[in-house]
Image (tube, rainbow, N blue to C red; front, side):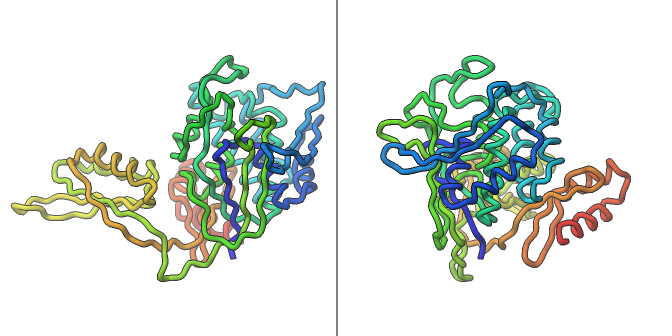
Length: 392
């Protein structure tokens, strides 16, 4: 059975709320404390306290940083990645935390126009934010969570006060994360900062469905509520997490999906290749091209895309925009994806992503090719090494 965690983020999401929700669902507090203690940081303490938020009993994670420690240092991203990467964290907690901070660095770097390794992380580089991320990843491991998903994420409006001054709400890092990860979101009529960069990064980076999904079919084992600092009248300021074993899907049931297609007879190979890339970036499960013969014996191509029904409008618009077609057709299909997980292995100091399923280990070819170019190894050797590391 696969243990899953589904987060209800209708009231927004923050790193401390995520960690607190997992503790409320039964994650061992000492596993979080031990994980943070393995980092080379001092002057902190965590307590988990029972509170009420609009009548809902929940857990509040009170992360305290001692007065002599600046809670908002300008830490370079590379410092945080080294801090986590060189720690004694377990491999799965370390990999998850590194994925979150690598994505935050890339997003912040794109906003400020600097290399991700060199970008200075302000709020997300603070001690309490590092604790929130590492603590949440440790709590997921403590609960044995293998698959993560979340609802659409609620965001506020107006402006919020940051170290950079008054910024739009949601702040640029959150907006960019939501866009890069193609996350589903909706507006809430409040000027509160409902969604923070660390909370959104934890959801969208670690989730197997970053676009936001309904709660999957599961045998529920536990429910937890993580409280925000404010107690807002009329709306519980909490993140809810549901922990359970994913229900076995029968071969007859499958998952609902939509296959879109369009015939194109006036586009170059370069344009069609770019269209495939754009469809995948927009969130399609898969995209491909087949050659056809149209009327009058004219050679042409059919561009296909397979997607979740919730992404239909986005994928359809992407297909029209990047093929120049005047229309798209679609059919409803069923799909039976095999359960798989993504791991990161290190070869000669370089990260390589690897998907691991029950009967197959598949290395991300672009990563393997990059390592081959950097090290001079044949790409087939890099792939073999990555497969061996992921299987061991």
